[in-house]
Length: 80
Length: 80
Length: 80
Length: 80
Image 1 (cartoon, each protein chain N blue to C red):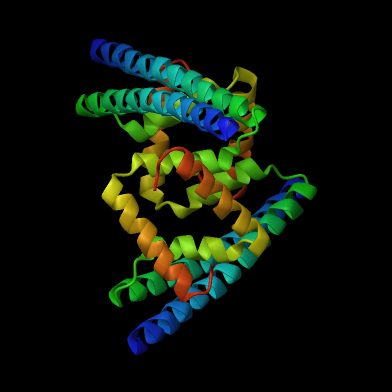
Image 2: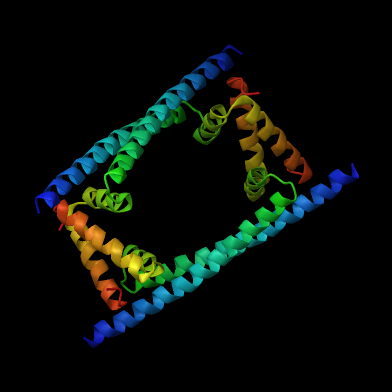
């Protein structure tokens, strides 16, 4: 029984740590949304911004290879 | 009570229709995976193929505008 | 050059096969939505229906173990 | 031209703010993973923990209604 109580307390502590972190994460996700909203209000296209963020995350040579391959496939299919 | 029985039967029929459709959908999703695997075995890059499929789904003028905007943003950030 | 042409044709065939399958899949996904909409119109709660569909997909003993574990954790945290 | 330069700088600032926030968010997401890993190492089932976290996020009366409805549907389909 005493073991069950200890385990319940330990479980609760894990859950509460996760909840605090999830709350923090949500706060930052809201901040990200706010920046995108501010950029949109300044005339920027947020969909294109998201593509740029993804491209900047890639290593240069990886991005260049992906660009080249896409260009080749687009040409092959007449997607100018 | 009789109403509850009828409702249970009706609910079961809805659930079974959904399950049959979900199974069919899974079958087709597996077929898609097979085509990508076959293309990969023939030397094609499936990640780029997925991008091409997405681009072909867009209307021409929408795709061209998205392309132009991305080009502008990439240039602004030196993402050549 | 001739090789490039062959490859472009082969790529196009793969892409078109994928597109046909994706269209079929979308049709079935729409059918699933229709069944849920019909169930909803008959007074059923679709969120609960989705849980039931997920539960029925599990093997009996797996579902029973998951149920028992959740019951234990809920009790430990006073989530009656 | 001068306007284009200003816009590029402004775009870059928005993108860099987003990147800093995304990095912070990733750090917290990694912390969450670490807590789950630690809980798992202590014998807890993380899948069940995630269900508990989701349940605790719901308002009590909403959770109780969802529980009751699921119970009804499970009974109707013999999912004891």
